[in-house]
Length: 421
Image (cartoon, rainbow, N blue to C red; front, side):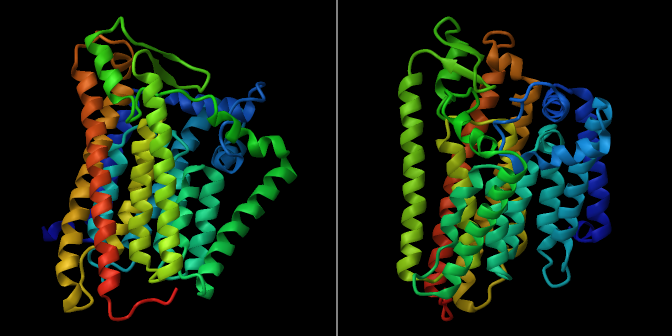
């Protein structure tokens, strides 16, 4: 509808949807415990607090601590305000150039809605910051790929998951641009790691890696879907408890096999990334669109394969998908691309809708029904069905992402002007 295709309408929508989000914060403030943990990590006496986070990933909380001082209420308010500030800034970026790219309104409305349906974790977790760094990298792929690679390196120092996206930076082996991108990515990581060592120590640099080894099967993870659902049918067979990984994990029948399956899927995901990089290294045809599709496919594969999954992880996908909706939404450059672009449009539309639905279901799981998920039988099977539906949607999203990647690679192969890098 034309009424929604204006900058003023988008900002009005943003205000309305963020008021709803603030209402959700007041309705259920259980996730405020994460803010309390960040506050303890900044001002508490326990030196091990937040050491499971890469140090650059804690920089936003350090900034908030500088502004708030040792006042927990001020810390929470300023942290929330900072998240809303970067949220609004990203919306401004999405709307920039809307006259040339009217599809910017599609991206903007997706972001407006996403930021509310994903719930409290949108403004009470640190995950939004590396996700926006990845989105910035995705936005710059077709404009300044070296800067995009450097931003991806920054994101990888803030959180470990963006590191697997680096395979998308690879182009033909004899193309200068390939090695410029990879050099920028590595230089960014090395430079930031040296800063961490200079202001802390080597132990603080590697502490997040040690943390990964103590993880079991987290209750929200995709591999845990069946035992968690079954635990609501047979509550005496499985046990769910708070583990050393600082998350809730399930133990019981099938769990050991599912942990092995998760490890196998993770290895398969890494082999897929390596295979994609080797294909590009040999064939070239590096393109921003297919790299963006690869980024999103890898994020979905991380969701599916990982033995750990939490509601806030959906935040990783929202910003980069908004970039795709703006930069890739069908506008065929030639008649030869029109059939593919029409298919891409349908896939992106379905992927966006599934992402919004998965985010909303995730919010219903956590925080609104999390206790019922953990303690089987408390509220019947509805919480288990909510988790099951969310995880099935993630499978659908992964399939859609693969379809989009396949279409983009086909588009590159049919292009009359292939990039040498």
